Image (tube, rainbow, N blue to C red):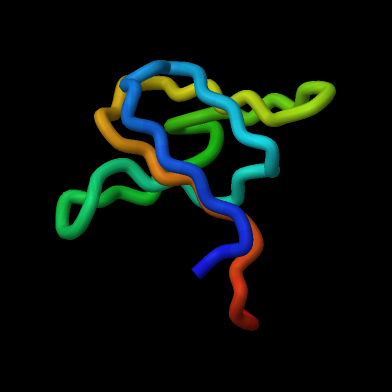
Length: 71
């Protein structure tokens, strides 16, 4: 559970969120993969949002930030 979440199914190499992403996952269930910043994507802060530049196309991307539970 996270305070912020977004899902993208467009397959685009660039997507944006209104929050700074902490975790990006590709896929669902046993096929899900946690993506690594710099290897799989880069984040660029813009004036009103954050641009996520992926290094490969994915059919489904889930973006999360601010976990609702303590570490």
